[in-house]
Every structure is written in structure tokens, then in C-alpha cells.
Image 1: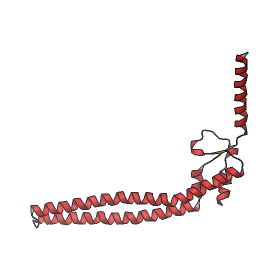
Image 2: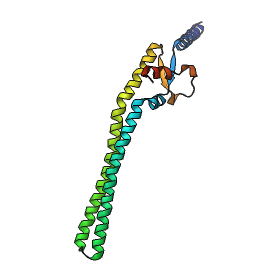
Image 3: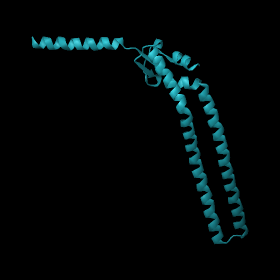
Image 4: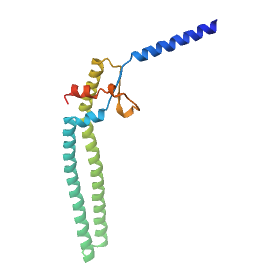
Length: 168
């Protein structure tokens, strides 16, 4: 008798949990696709590209200067205008220039990444707020990003609702 009560209690719990799951509403969205359509993201990418070109131009100027200095030192060394000590000092200056170029390249990558993160943060917050608003307006308990969903019924895609909320 005790066993029957335990089994029936367990079955009631399982059925209760299943009915709770059936009452929950889910949705999914592809936030990457939404971001790709946003004018703010396109403007941000254009700004970053312009900054990158500007920094690359400066870096290219540094490389060209290093090449010119190297050629001048080689020419002076070949003509005998530099003593071995002067050649050594000139070589050290060239190594320092090369290290400076390497540091500049690292700083450039870091600067671009920081600027991208800084400009992208408010855009991501805007998208997340739109997703939250859509979830609340439609009574959804969960919204998943499509990047992690293995299967989804297209009727649960709330991307059009999020786009409408963002004015896209």
C-alpha cells in the first residue's frame, strides 16, 4: 500500500511538472542577424574601418621610415663612412624603431577592439531591451538566441517583433 502511494505521488509530481512546462511560452531570435541590419552597427563599422585605415597609414609610414633609415645606414656602411661602433649604434636604433613599430601594431589592435566594445555596448543594450520588451508583451518566459538552438519551430521566432520594436 505504501508503495502504491509513493508511485501515485511520484506520478502526480511528474504530471504537475509536465503541465507547468506546457504552460510556459518560449521564443527565439537571431540577434546577430538583427545587429547586422541595424544602421547603428553599420555606422559603427564604418567608423572603425576609417580609424583602422588611419592607424594603418601611420604604421605604414613608420615602416617606410625604418626601411629608409636601414637603406641609408647600409649605404654609409658600404662606403666606409661608419665605424664599427657607429654601425652598432645605428643597428641598435633600427632595432628600437622595429620594436616601436611592433608596439604600435599591438596598441592599434587594442585601440580598435576597445573602441568597438565601447560603441557596441549601447547598441547591445538597445537590442536586449527590445528583446525583453517583446518577451513581456507576448508573455514569453524564455527567449533563446538562435546560435544555441538545435531545433526551433519558425512560429516561435520573435525576430520580426524585435525588429519592429527597434524600428527596423
